Image 1 (tube, rainbow, N blue to C red):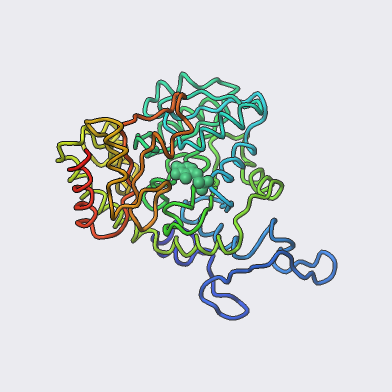
Image 2: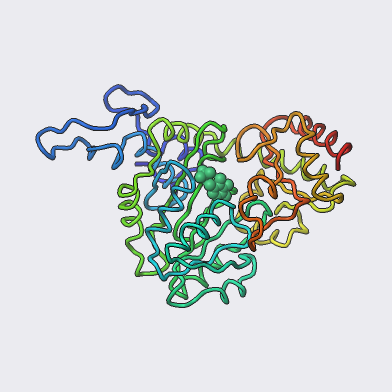
Length: 394
Ligand SMILES: *Cc1c(COP(=O)(O)O)cnc(C)c1O
Protein backbone atom coordinates (compact mmCIF):
# COMPACT_ATOMS: atom_id res chain seq x y z
CA UNK A 1 0.00 0.00 0.00
CA UNK A 2 1.23 3.48 -0.81
CA UNK A 3 1.50 5.96 2.04
CA UNK A 4 0.77 9.66 2.24
CA UNK A 5 3.93 10.64 4.06
CA UNK A 6 6.39 9.80 1.31
CA UNK A 7 4.69 11.41 -1.68
CA UNK A 8 2.56 14.35 -2.71
CA UNK A 9 -1.13 14.68 -1.97
CA UNK A 10 -2.41 14.15 -5.52
CA UNK A 11 -0.18 11.13 -6.09
CA UNK A 12 -1.68 9.60 -2.96
CA UNK A 13 -5.21 10.57 -3.96
CA UNK A 14 -4.83 8.86 -7.32
CA UNK A 15 -2.99 5.73 -6.16
CA UNK A 16 -3.52 4.90 -2.47
CA UNK A 17 -5.61 1.75 -2.06
CA UNK A 18 -5.93 1.51 -5.84
CA UNK A 19 -3.53 -1.07 -7.21
CA UNK A 20 -4.60 -2.35 -10.63
CA UNK A 21 -7.19 -5.12 -10.24
CA UNK A 22 -5.22 -8.40 -9.87
CA UNK A 23 -7.69 -10.42 -11.98
CA UNK A 24 -8.00 -8.08 -14.98
CA UNK A 25 -5.53 -5.22 -14.64
CA UNK A 26 -8.40 -2.70 -14.53
CA UNK A 27 -6.71 0.56 -13.53
CA UNK A 28 -9.69 1.75 -11.48
CA UNK A 29 -11.07 -0.38 -8.65
CA UNK A 30 -14.22 -2.05 -9.98
CA UNK A 31 -17.61 -1.49 -8.38
CA UNK A 32 -17.96 -4.77 -6.49
CA UNK A 33 -21.76 -4.71 -6.47
CA UNK A 34 -22.01 -7.84 -4.38
CA UNK A 35 -23.32 -8.83 -0.97
CA UNK A 36 -21.56 -12.13 -0.29
CA UNK A 37 -18.42 -14.09 -1.24
CA UNK A 38 -17.70 -17.73 -2.07
CA UNK A 39 -15.64 -19.45 0.62
CA UNK A 40 -12.98 -22.05 -0.20
CA UNK A 41 -14.13 -24.46 2.46
CA UNK A 42 -15.82 -23.23 5.63
CA UNK A 43 -14.02 -20.09 6.81
CA UNK A 44 -11.73 -20.08 3.77
CA UNK A 45 -12.17 -16.41 2.91
CA UNK A 46 -10.46 -14.91 -0.14
CA UNK A 47 -8.76 -11.72 0.97
CA UNK A 48 -10.85 -11.58 4.13
CA UNK A 49 -14.14 -10.96 2.31
CA UNK A 50 -17.15 -12.65 3.82
CA UNK A 51 -20.17 -10.30 3.62
CA UNK A 52 -20.31 -6.74 2.29
CA UNK A 53 -21.52 -5.02 5.47
CA UNK A 54 -18.28 -6.22 7.06
CA UNK A 55 -16.04 -5.55 4.06
CA UNK A 56 -16.31 -4.86 0.34
CA UNK A 57 -13.30 -4.35 -1.98
CA UNK A 58 -14.53 -1.04 -3.44
CA UNK A 59 -15.08 0.31 0.07
CA UNK A 60 -11.68 -1.02 1.15
CA UNK A 61 -10.04 0.93 -1.67
CA UNK A 62 -11.80 4.12 -0.57
CA UNK A 63 -11.03 3.56 3.11
CA UNK A 64 -7.31 3.06 2.39
CA UNK A 65 -7.24 6.20 0.26
CA UNK A 66 -9.04 8.26 2.94
CA UNK A 67 -6.63 7.08 5.65
CA UNK A 68 -3.59 7.85 3.49
CA UNK A 69 -4.85 11.35 2.59
CA UNK A 70 -5.36 12.28 6.25
CA UNK A 71 -2.12 10.59 7.35
CA UNK A 72 -4.12 8.29 9.65
CA UNK A 73 -3.95 4.63 10.64
CA UNK A 74 -7.42 3.55 9.56
CA UNK A 75 -10.22 4.95 7.44
CA UNK A 76 -13.92 4.06 7.50
CA UNK A 77 -16.51 4.94 4.86
CA UNK A 78 -20.15 5.51 5.78
CA UNK A 79 -23.51 6.03 4.11
CA UNK A 80 -23.45 9.72 5.12
CA UNK A 81 -21.39 12.18 7.10
CA UNK A 82 -23.82 11.96 10.00
CA UNK A 83 -23.70 8.15 9.99
CA UNK A 84 -19.93 8.43 10.46
CA UNK A 85 -20.29 10.98 13.26
CA UNK A 86 -22.90 8.81 14.98
CA UNK A 87 -20.47 5.91 14.84
CA UNK A 88 -17.68 8.03 16.37
CA UNK A 89 -19.87 9.26 19.22
CA UNK A 90 -21.30 5.80 19.96
CA UNK A 91 -17.85 4.24 19.85
CA UNK A 92 -16.25 6.75 22.21
CA UNK A 93 -18.93 7.61 24.76
CA UNK A 94 -21.29 5.86 27.16
CA UNK A 95 -24.23 7.33 29.10
CA UNK A 96 -22.94 9.79 31.70
CA UNK A 97 -20.14 11.06 29.46
CA UNK A 98 -19.82 14.63 28.24
CA UNK A 99 -18.87 16.30 24.93
CA UNK A 100 -17.72 19.88 24.33
CA UNK A 101 -19.44 21.15 21.17
CA UNK A 102 -18.66 24.23 19.08
CA UNK A 103 -21.00 27.25 19.09
CA UNK A 104 -21.36 27.00 15.32
CA UNK A 105 -21.32 23.30 14.52
CA UNK A 106 -22.98 21.90 11.42
CA UNK A 107 -26.70 22.01 12.23
CA UNK A 108 -27.19 18.27 11.76
CA UNK A 109 -24.30 17.45 14.08
CA UNK A 110 -25.77 19.62 16.79
CA UNK A 111 -29.24 18.16 16.22
CA UNK A 112 -27.74 14.68 16.69
CA UNK A 113 -25.92 15.63 19.89
CA UNK A 114 -28.93 17.48 21.30
CA UNK A 115 -31.79 15.21 20.17
CA UNK A 116 -30.23 11.75 19.90
CA UNK A 117 -27.14 11.63 22.14
CA UNK A 118 -28.57 13.75 24.98
CA UNK A 119 -31.71 11.63 25.50
CA UNK A 120 -29.29 8.67 25.45
CA UNK A 121 -27.51 10.14 28.48
CA UNK A 122 -24.56 11.84 26.75
CA UNK A 123 -24.37 15.45 27.86
CA UNK A 124 -22.76 18.39 26.12
CA UNK A 125 -21.66 21.97 26.69
CA UNK A 126 -21.42 24.47 23.85
CA UNK A 127 -18.25 26.58 23.76
CA UNK A 128 -16.65 28.96 21.23
CA UNK A 129 -13.78 26.87 19.85
CA UNK A 130 -11.78 29.95 18.90
CA UNK A 131 -11.43 30.76 22.62
CA UNK A 132 -9.10 28.26 24.30
CA UNK A 133 -9.94 29.49 27.81
CA UNK A 134 -13.65 29.01 27.19
CA UNK A 135 -13.00 25.45 26.00
CA UNK A 136 -10.81 24.75 29.04
CA UNK A 137 -13.65 25.98 31.27
CA UNK A 138 -16.24 23.85 29.44
CA UNK A 139 -14.28 20.62 29.92
CA UNK A 140 -15.39 18.50 32.87
CA UNK A 141 -12.30 16.52 33.87
CA UNK A 142 -13.09 12.83 34.15
CA UNK A 143 -16.42 13.24 32.35
CA UNK A 144 -15.56 14.98 29.08
CA UNK A 145 -14.58 12.36 26.50
CA UNK A 146 -14.62 14.42 23.30
CA UNK A 147 -13.91 17.95 22.19
CA UNK A 148 -15.69 18.37 18.85
CA UNK A 149 -14.11 20.83 16.45
CA UNK A 150 -15.15 22.26 13.10
CA UNK A 151 -12.66 24.60 11.47
CA UNK A 152 -13.52 26.50 9.39
CA UNK A 153 -16.97 26.30 10.92
CA UNK A 154 -20.34 26.21 9.24
CA UNK A 155 -21.78 28.72 8.38
CA UNK A 156 -19.83 31.44 10.23
CA UNK A 157 -16.34 30.40 9.04
CA UNK A 158 -14.92 30.58 12.55
CA UNK A 159 -11.41 29.22 13.05
CA UNK A 160 -10.22 26.98 15.89
CA UNK A 161 -6.60 26.31 16.82
CA UNK A 162 -6.41 22.51 16.45
CA UNK A 163 -3.00 22.10 18.12
CA UNK A 164 -4.01 24.31 21.05
CA UNK A 165 -7.27 22.43 21.55
CA UNK A 166 -5.51 19.05 21.35
CA UNK A 167 -3.17 20.07 24.14
CA UNK A 168 -6.03 21.19 26.41
CA UNK A 169 -8.23 18.17 25.65
CA UNK A 170 -5.50 15.57 26.04
CA UNK A 171 -4.39 17.05 29.35
CA UNK A 172 -7.96 16.49 30.58
CA UNK A 173 -8.14 12.95 29.19
CA UNK A 174 -10.42 13.86 26.27
CA UNK A 175 -9.99 13.21 22.56
CA UNK A 176 -10.25 15.78 19.79
CA UNK A 177 -12.52 15.05 16.83
CA UNK A 178 -12.20 17.42 13.86
CA UNK A 179 -14.92 17.66 11.23
CA UNK A 180 -12.64 18.45 8.28
CA UNK A 181 -15.43 18.72 5.70
CA UNK A 182 -14.97 22.42 4.89
CA UNK A 183 -11.18 22.45 4.72
CA UNK A 184 -10.71 18.95 3.20
CA UNK A 185 -7.61 16.84 3.74
CA UNK A 186 -5.92 18.84 0.98
CA UNK A 187 -6.09 22.18 2.79
CA UNK A 188 -5.75 20.95 6.39
CA UNK A 189 -4.32 17.89 8.15
CA UNK A 190 -5.83 17.78 11.66
CA UNK A 191 -4.13 14.53 12.71
CA UNK A 192 -0.70 16.06 12.11
CA UNK A 193 -1.78 18.93 14.41
CA UNK A 194 -2.64 16.55 17.25
CA UNK A 195 -6.29 15.65 16.58
CA UNK A 196 -7.29 12.03 17.22
CA UNK A 197 -10.17 11.45 14.82
CA UNK A 198 -11.19 13.23 11.62
CA UNK A 199 -14.67 13.10 10.11
CA UNK A 200 -15.90 14.20 6.71
CA UNK A 201 -19.13 14.52 4.89
CA UNK A 202 -17.75 13.12 1.62
CA UNK A 203 -21.02 14.40 0.13
CA UNK A 204 -19.22 17.74 -0.09
CA UNK A 205 -15.71 18.43 -1.47
CA UNK A 206 -14.42 14.85 -1.30
CA UNK A 207 -17.12 13.62 -3.69
CA UNK A 208 -17.16 17.06 -5.24
CA UNK A 209 -19.87 16.65 -7.89
CA UNK A 210 -23.14 16.78 -5.93
CA UNK A 211 -23.95 13.22 -6.95
CA UNK A 212 -23.38 11.16 -3.80
CA UNK A 213 -24.06 11.23 -0.05
CA UNK A 214 -21.30 9.74 2.07
CA UNK A 215 -19.18 10.03 5.18
CA UNK A 216 -15.66 9.26 6.30
CA UNK A 217 -13.90 8.73 9.61
CA UNK A 218 -10.12 8.51 9.95
CA UNK A 219 -8.33 7.54 13.17
CA UNK A 220 -4.83 8.82 14.04
CA UNK A 221 -1.80 6.55 14.23
CA UNK A 222 -1.20 7.65 17.81
CA UNK A 223 -4.00 8.70 20.13
CA UNK A 224 -3.51 11.60 22.52
CA UNK A 225 -5.01 9.69 25.46
CA UNK A 226 -3.53 6.28 26.27
CA UNK A 227 -6.84 4.78 27.40
CA UNK A 228 -8.16 5.24 23.87
CA UNK A 229 -5.49 3.26 22.03
CA UNK A 230 -8.22 0.95 20.70
CA UNK A 231 -10.32 3.69 19.04
CA UNK A 232 -9.79 2.24 15.57
CA UNK A 233 -11.02 -1.17 16.70
CA UNK A 234 -14.04 0.33 18.45
CA UNK A 235 -15.05 2.29 15.36
CA UNK A 236 -14.48 -0.70 13.09
CA UNK A 237 -16.61 -2.84 15.41
CA UNK A 238 -19.44 -0.31 15.45
CA UNK A 239 -19.28 0.29 11.70
CA UNK A 240 -20.08 -3.40 11.22
CA UNK A 241 -22.38 -3.75 14.23
CA UNK A 242 -24.54 -0.75 13.27
CA UNK A 243 -24.09 -1.16 9.53
CA UNK A 244 -24.38 2.37 8.10
CA UNK A 245 -21.71 1.61 5.50
CA UNK A 246 -21.03 3.26 2.15
CA UNK A 247 -22.39 1.08 -0.66
CA UNK A 248 -20.02 0.02 -3.47
CA UNK A 249 -21.22 2.55 -6.06
CA UNK A 250 -21.16 5.42 -3.57
CA UNK A 251 -17.67 4.40 -2.44
CA UNK A 252 -16.56 4.33 -6.07
CA UNK A 253 -17.96 7.82 -6.74
CA UNK A 254 -16.15 9.28 -3.72
CA UNK A 255 -12.93 7.54 -4.74
CA UNK A 256 -13.24 9.08 -8.19
CA UNK A 257 -13.91 12.50 -6.65
CA UNK A 258 -10.81 12.31 -4.46
CA UNK A 259 -8.52 11.95 -7.48
CA UNK A 260 -9.20 15.58 -8.48
CA UNK A 261 -9.58 17.02 -4.98
CA UNK A 262 -6.34 19.03 -5.07
CA UNK A 263 -6.98 20.67 -8.45
CA UNK A 264 -10.58 21.39 -7.56
CA UNK A 265 -9.63 22.93 -4.21
CA UNK A 266 -7.05 25.22 -5.81
CA UNK A 267 -9.73 26.50 -8.17
CA UNK A 268 -12.37 26.76 -5.40
CA UNK A 269 -9.87 28.89 -3.45
CA UNK A 270 -8.97 31.07 -6.46
CA UNK A 271 -12.64 31.76 -7.15
CA UNK A 272 -13.52 32.32 -3.49
CA UNK A 273 -10.77 34.94 -3.23
CA UNK A 274 -12.20 36.79 -6.25
CA UNK A 275 -15.75 36.63 -4.87
CA UNK A 276 -14.53 37.88 -1.47
CA UNK A 277 -12.83 40.83 -3.18
CA UNK A 278 -16.06 41.70 -4.94
CA UNK A 279 -18.26 41.35 -1.83
CA UNK A 280 -15.87 43.38 0.32
CA UNK A 281 -16.30 46.30 -2.07
CA UNK A 282 -20.12 46.12 -2.35
CA UNK A 283 -22.24 48.70 -0.48
CA UNK A 284 -25.04 46.26 0.37
CA UNK A 285 -22.67 43.98 2.29
CA UNK A 286 -22.02 44.80 5.94
CA UNK A 287 -19.55 42.00 6.64
CA UNK A 288 -17.70 39.28 4.72
CA UNK A 289 -16.74 36.17 6.69
CA UNK A 290 -13.71 34.47 5.15
CA UNK A 291 -10.63 33.27 7.06
CA UNK A 292 -8.39 34.53 4.26
CA UNK A 293 -9.23 38.14 5.13
CA UNK A 294 -6.49 39.70 7.30
CA UNK A 295 -9.20 41.24 9.51
CA UNK A 296 -10.79 37.84 10.29
CA UNK A 297 -10.18 37.05 13.98
CA UNK A 298 -8.88 33.56 13.11
CA UNK A 299 -6.73 34.64 10.16
CA UNK A 300 -3.35 34.00 11.77
CA UNK A 301 -4.35 30.56 13.06
CA UNK A 302 -5.92 29.65 9.71
CA UNK A 303 -2.78 30.75 7.88
CA UNK A 304 -0.68 28.52 10.14
CA UNK A 305 -2.79 25.38 9.86
CA UNK A 306 -4.35 25.59 6.38
CA UNK A 307 -2.69 25.49 2.97
CA UNK A 308 -5.25 28.02 1.64
CA UNK A 309 -8.56 29.32 2.97
CA UNK A 310 -11.13 27.25 1.11
CA UNK A 311 -14.16 27.76 -1.08
CA UNK A 312 -16.80 28.68 1.52
CA UNK A 313 -17.71 32.33 2.00
CA UNK A 314 -20.46 33.87 4.12
CA UNK A 315 -21.60 37.48 4.18
CA UNK A 316 -24.17 39.67 5.91
CA UNK A 317 -26.45 42.20 4.28
CA UNK A 318 -26.99 45.69 5.68
CA UNK A 319 -30.70 45.57 4.97
CA UNK A 320 -31.34 42.46 7.02
CA UNK A 321 -33.04 39.11 6.66
CA UNK A 322 -35.56 40.06 3.98
CA UNK A 323 -32.78 41.31 1.70
CA UNK A 324 -30.76 38.13 2.37
CA UNK A 325 -33.67 35.86 1.46
CA UNK A 326 -34.46 37.86 -1.71
CA UNK A 327 -30.83 37.96 -2.85
CA UNK A 328 -30.64 34.15 -2.54
CA UNK A 329 -33.64 33.82 -4.84
CA UNK A 330 -32.55 36.49 -7.35
CA UNK A 331 -29.37 34.79 -8.60
CA UNK A 332 -29.48 32.87 -11.87
CA UNK A 333 -26.12 31.15 -12.29
CA UNK A 334 -25.69 30.33 -8.60
CA UNK A 335 -28.01 27.52 -7.53
CA UNK A 336 -30.19 28.14 -4.50
CA UNK A 337 -29.76 24.97 -2.50
CA UNK A 338 -28.37 23.24 0.54
CA UNK A 339 -25.11 21.31 0.62
CA UNK A 340 -21.74 22.56 -0.60
CA UNK A 341 -18.43 21.52 -2.10
CA UNK A 342 -19.58 20.61 -5.61
CA UNK A 343 -18.17 21.98 -8.86
CA UNK A 344 -21.27 24.17 -9.25
CA UNK A 345 -21.71 27.28 -7.11
CA UNK A 346 -24.44 27.21 -4.49
CA UNK A 347 -26.06 29.97 -2.44
CA UNK A 348 -28.28 29.59 0.60
CA UNK A 349 -29.87 31.30 3.57
CA UNK A 350 -28.59 29.36 6.62
CA UNK A 351 -31.21 30.77 9.03
CA UNK A 352 -34.12 29.31 7.05
CA UNK A 353 -32.35 26.42 5.33
CA UNK A 354 -29.29 24.46 6.59
CA UNK A 355 -29.45 25.87 10.11
CA UNK A 356 -33.22 26.07 10.61
CA UNK A 357 -32.92 23.11 13.02
CA UNK A 358 -30.76 25.15 15.45
CA UNK A 359 -33.14 28.13 15.71
CA UNK A 360 -33.73 28.90 19.38
CA UNK A 361 -30.52 27.09 20.48
CA UNK A 362 -27.12 28.64 21.27
CA UNK A 363 -26.20 27.84 17.67
CA UNK A 364 -28.82 30.08 16.03
CA UNK A 365 -27.33 32.05 13.10
CA UNK A 366 -28.02 35.70 12.11
CA UNK A 367 -30.98 36.24 9.76
CA UNK A 368 -29.02 38.60 7.48
CA UNK A 369 -26.47 35.88 6.70
CA UNK A 370 -25.96 34.37 3.22
CA UNK A 371 -23.65 31.39 2.65
CA UNK A 372 -21.84 30.68 -0.60
CA UNK A 373 -20.21 27.48 -1.77
CA UNK A 374 -18.03 28.94 -4.50
CA UNK A 375 -17.76 26.48 -7.37
CA UNK A 376 -15.20 26.11 -10.13
CA UNK A 377 -17.00 27.98 -12.92
CA UNK A 378 -15.43 31.15 -14.34
CA UNK A 379 -15.12 33.64 -11.50
CA UNK A 380 -16.22 36.60 -13.59
CA UNK A 381 -19.56 34.94 -14.39
CA UNK A 382 -20.14 34.19 -10.71
CA UNK A 383 -19.37 37.77 -9.73
CA UNK A 384 -21.62 39.32 -12.40
CA UNK A 385 -24.55 37.16 -11.30
CA UNK A 386 -24.04 38.10 -7.65
CA UNK A 387 -23.71 41.76 -8.59
CA UNK A 388 -27.09 41.74 -10.32
CA UNK A 389 -28.81 40.05 -7.38
CA UNK A 390 -27.26 42.39 -4.82
CA UNK A 391 -27.88 45.53 -6.85
CA UNK A 392 -31.59 44.74 -6.89
CA UNK A 393 -32.15 43.20 -3.47
CA UNK A 394 -29.14 43.84 -1.25
C1 LIG B 1 -22.97 18.11 5.38
C2 LIG B 1 -22.14 18.15 6.59
C3 LIG B 1 -22.23 17.14 7.55
C4 LIG B 1 -23.22 16.00 7.44
O1 LIG B 1 -22.93 15.17 6.36
P1 LIG B 1 -24.06 14.36 5.55
O2 LIG B 1 -23.26 13.70 4.48
O3 LIG B 1 -25.05 15.34 5.05
O4 LIG B 1 -24.67 13.39 6.51
C5 LIG B 1 -21.40 17.22 8.64
N1 LIG B 1 -20.53 18.25 8.81
C6 LIG B 1 -20.43 19.24 7.92
C7 LIG B 1 -19.47 20.34 8.16
C8 LIG B 1 -21.22 19.23 6.78
O5 LIG B 1 -21.12 20.23 5.90
